[in-house]
Image (cartoon, rainbow, N blue to C red; front, side, top):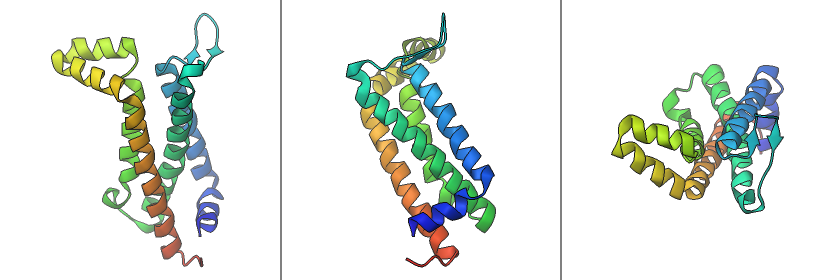
Amino acid sequence: MQKQALKLVFTDGKYTALAVGIFCGLFILLSYMSEMIFFEPQFLFYVPQDQSLNFVLIVAVSSLSGVVTSLSIYRIARFGDGMKRTGGGFLGTIIGAGAGACSCSSLGFAAASAVGSVGGTATAFLTQYEIPLRLVSIAILGYTYYLSVRGISSRCNIVK
């Protein structure tokens, strides 16, 4: 069932390009914010040994976000499903990206200075619970993946 639904969606090049684009963009953004990618003075990609779990979670969130977003957009375009039925994938992507983006010290200081103590509290919370928040976003994305594949399979009469 999953294989046929994924084949149905990703045989169209625009959905494949969308998934790859979202993966690359989110991976680069989260890796940069987690200080694993450096662009100056030269390009450097480095994953410290103590950050290997964080790196695996970044790859998982990025790849699931790309696949789930493509599946959700396919459902919206093909079947006219609204955001209410496909919105969970976008929620998981936002949680996963937000957990990584606000943990960076420069962005955290900017958020804290822009909104005062609320920004500082939010930054401290996201920094402290970065890994659990990414795990929650992976769970949301996994559930949305399951619902999307099930919805595409049932509407396209894919046999189990």
